[in-house]
Image (tube, rainbow, N blue to C red):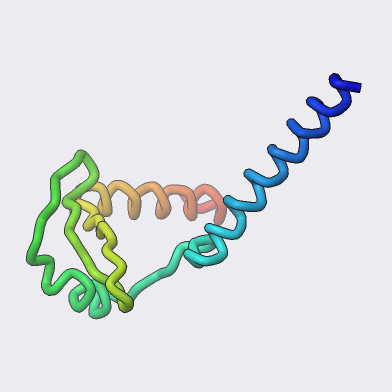
Length: 99
């Protein structure tokens, strides 16, 4: 009887944790990433004024969405963009059968 109670409590507790996470994600509306135009990013970051850091892929800037929600915006480096464009172009050539 005690084993059954402990197992049922453990399963119930696991379900509650998943429900709480799902509710949190729905409230935050972060199930899908949002794409922004460059002009919107300029407004969100106030012309990329406050730099938070620099990484191997680019710089990170502080931004603010409507409703006083702060975000980090990563601006990819030109080198990384060139590598990505080259990779996509190469894949397109392979897919098209072009040489």
